[in-house]
Amino acid sequence: MRDARGAAFRRLGLCAVFLALQLSLDACRTHGAHNQPPTVAARTAGQISSPVAVTHYTIDARRSQVLVLVYRDGPMGHLGHNHVIAVRELSGSVVMPQDQMQSAFQLEFPVESMSIDEPQLRAQEGAEFESTLDEAAIAGTRDHMLGTALLDSKQYPRIHLQSEQIRGGADGLIARTRILVRDTTALVEIPLTLQHTDEEIIVSGQFDLTHTQLGLTPYSVALGALRVAERMHVRYRLIATRDH
Image 1 (cartoon, rainbow, N blue to C red):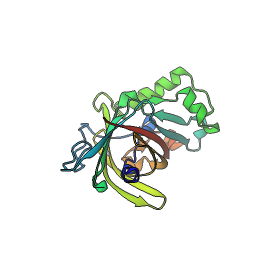
Image 2: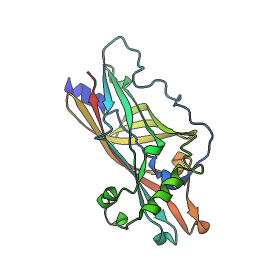
Image 3: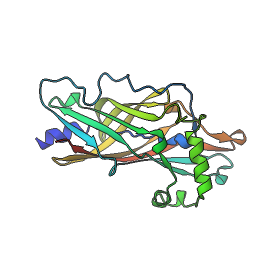
C-alpha cells in the first residue's frame, strides 16, 4: 500500500515554482490586466469525481520552501547583485485516488508574501550571494517587483499553480504544471524526487527556468549593459501532510 501511495505522490511536483517564478519576478517585466483563477486544467485537487476512496493531503507552508535565484548579467553586471526570492504563505492540496493517473494538485500564494534577499538565505547560497545589501536596497528591489511594471500585486494579488499531467522522466518524474502569473499562463515541466511515509510526502527538486518561458522580459538598463540574466534557478522542497 505504501508503494502505491508513494508512486502516486511522485505526481506532486511543484512547481514552484515557483516557483517560481516566481520568483525571477524581482527583475522581470510582464504584461496583462486581470488575474483570474486558473481555469486551464480539467480538474483541481479536491474536485476529482470518483466512486472510490481518495486520500487528501495539505501543504505544510511552515516546513516547505521554494526559492528562486535571480542572477545579474551584462558587461556592467559587476555593478549589480544576484537575488534570492522566497515564496511565503504557500497553500495547496493534493488528491490521490486509487487510479494513480488521476492524482492532482493545486498550489497558490500571495504575491506580496514573497520576500527578497533575506540575509540568512543569501548566506546559505554561497559566494555568488555574499555581497551585503542594505535595507533600502532590498526594499527598493521588492517595491520594483511588486509594482505595476512587474507583478502589479494590487491588481494581481495571487499566483496559482495547477497540475495537468504526470509522466516518467529519465531520472524520475516530470510534473507538467500550469502557472498563472498576472494574466499569463505558462506550461512548465518540473522534475521531482519523492520521500514518503504513511502520513506525509516530501517532494523536492531543482531546475532552470527562463524569463521567456514565463512571457517575461528581464529588467535591463544602459542598453542592456546591466541586466538580469535570462536564466533563473529554482529550488524547492514541499511537505504535504495527510488529512484526517
